[in-house]
Structures are given as structure tokens and as C-alpha cells.
Image 1 (cartoon, helix red, strand yellow):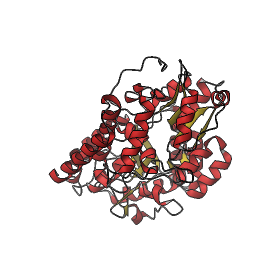
Image 2 (image 1 turned 180 degrees about the vertical axis):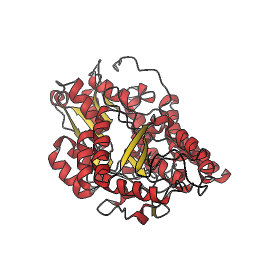
Image 3 (image 1 turned 120 degrees about the vertical axis):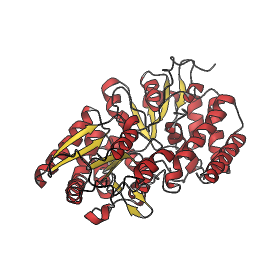
Image 4 (image 1 turned 180 degrees about the horizontal axis):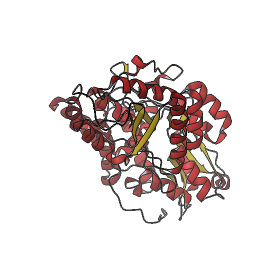
Length: 436
């Protein structure tokens, strides 16, 4: 008989990636700007200097970082860099689910900040609006970054933002539970299925992931979709359908709770902490909470299992990208860019990554980081083959992300055949593109 987990928290609007936990709420919002943002921002490009950004040497910064660890890392790094450059700075922290609305409001009132942090799926849409300055003119490059990490800040071949640290997802597991069940950490889908079956008991599910109806649900599906040969440009292809069927089979067999359709990533890790699930797909932002809240839990992490042995795991890249908005004050923009260039230096990437359990964007710094932080080495490996969500579709990504999580909801909630659900998803996306 399938186990009965503790009640799920009420479903809410979780349009961020990943959803923060109560213990280490590092926001990873992935809000779709859609058609709303572009006209609002585009009409403001070149409308004259923004106001309200302080003195000539005071850099106004807007971001959504809001945890003590974030403040230590972000404030500490900006403080050191600003002092070296003879600048001062002020930070305005906006809740992640309000940031884009705030950007629109600031754009309309010509009060855009000197430095603006965006979640990476939003960069291309904001850049397409004409609100961001190309960073190359200030000597900021992504030299040393892998192409996927560099892509996070690119639009139409031009660099508009840079990610000093990134994140992704992997498979956490209860080491003691696996040892007791006599199974090894899974590396393939067959092994993941068999391990989940062996680990499922009347009081515990073998596996959990987030299949919520938000971008979190798409974010967690992408590793399965991509490593199965699926592609966001071919939603009714065999690779996408096969990945959805794999998820569906796990739920249908009672190895994964059907409640995953209501669970954000924070809910999933809470189930893991409570002992209700033996393996979970999740990210490194949870490590601090695991260590603090469940010190007796013997957990470990491996890259997400792949369909066939020998296949590279491919997961999505998360993380925030820093940009220089066009404010009309070119001298101030140069100073803001100088502060940003110092902020993203490799040594600062290493410091911020260590404080925030993220991965340096610079490849050499990431390799050094893996040696210094073995608990995060799996995520370094996963990042090395990870992909940007917007690399292929650019500003069109949000509509496809919605189509993916909507299709999986139909599969897991209504028992719709994956081929039918994703055929409709493909037709919906095509119709939307045609209409726009």
C-alpha cells in the first residue's frame, strides 16, 4: 500500500525558481515578463536621466536577496569593491515575486537603479526592451565562463548581464535508508525506479520531485526531458513524452506521491527532512537548512540519473544575473559598471559561492570551489553540463515553460496520456506564437 505523507501546505502562486524554504530562503524567481514588460520598458529607453539615484558616487542597487547569508555575501562584497573604487552604495531589496512589477514602475517613473539584479530567465525580455546597457562597452566579459553560464546574460549575441554564481538541481538521498534497503545511489532511470521501489514503505515514498503548476515544475522536469533527447522546440517529440511517461509511471506505481503536483521545491525538501521521502530532486540552497535542521540525517547527493548509462546528465542553470540599466547618466553607468566588474571577479565569486551554497560562474573558480567544498562538488559537476533555459527560445521561453508544466499537470492529475497532453501543449505554443 502506498504511504500517506503528512498534509501538504496549501498551494499558492509559486512562480519562482526554486521556491525558498523556511530555513534558507534563497529566492530563485523565474517570473515571465510576457508582453507586459516589453512595451513599458521600451518606451522609456532614451527618455533622459533617471532621478533619485543619489550623488555622483553613490550606486543604487536593486535585488531580491533577503537572507542573512545573502546579506553577508552581497553586502560584504559590494562594500569591499565600493571602497576600493571610491564609491558608496545603497541596496533596495524587493520581494522576488514583485521585482518585475517594480522594474516596470521604476522604468515608467525614470527611477531605474544603477545596478539591477534579474533572475536569468527574465534577462532576454528586459534586454529586448532596450532598458539594459551592453556590458562589453565597459570591459566586462564572460572570459573563463562556460558557454551555458555566459548565455544566461546574453540577448541577440550581446552581453547584457553576468552571473557571478549559479545553481542547478541534483538528487539528494538518505544514505542510511539506501544502505538499509541494499541499493546503491542510482545513476540511470532503471536504477532510480528500482531504488524508489525498494525504498518505498507504508510510511515513506521512495522519491519526490516538484511537479507544481509553476515554473518550478518545469525546472524540475527539464533534466529528465533534456537527457531523454527532448527539446523545448519539439514538445510533442518522443523525448519529451517519454520523460513525462517516466514521471507518470513512478506516480502511478505509488513510488512518488501524487501530491507532488502541489509541492514546490521547499515542500519537497521538507518531506525529505521529515523522513517521508528517501530521495528528492532539489538544489544546493537547501544544504545549510539540512545541516542546521536535521544534523542527524545522513544524506548525500548525486547527479540526476539519466535514461541510459554513459549519457551526460543535463540540468537547467539557475542563478541571478547582474545588469546595468540605461539611466541616461552615462558617467554614473560607467561607475556602476566598474563596481559590477569588481563584484564579479573570480575571488569574489568564490567568496559569495561559499557563503550562499552556490557555484562560481567562472569555470576555473568552480573547479577550485569543488575542492574546497566537497559537499557541493556534485553540483559543480552538474553545472558543467547544464543548460540555460532561454538559450534556444529567448523571450519566448515563458510560454513554453507554462505549456510544459500544464501538460504534466494533466498527466499526473487527470491521468491524461503524455502523448495527448504534450501534443496539445505543442499546438498551444504554436498558436500563441502565431497570434503574437
